[in-house]
Image (cartoon, rainbow, N blue to C red; front, side, top):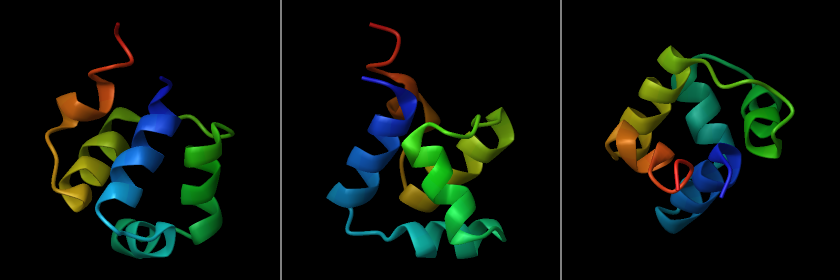
Length: 67
């Protein structure tokens, strides 16, 4: 599973919208949408902040990606 797919899975399981995450990040919905589509690179500091917003440890985002 790719990072963008993992983010989408976690976000949906928590009932959080893309717009909510984007707003909390101070970014546009299009920015976050592109992250989930895999059209934009996810920087480490953004991954950390998104994990905080989702209420998960950052390792959970990358957990299945390494396998």
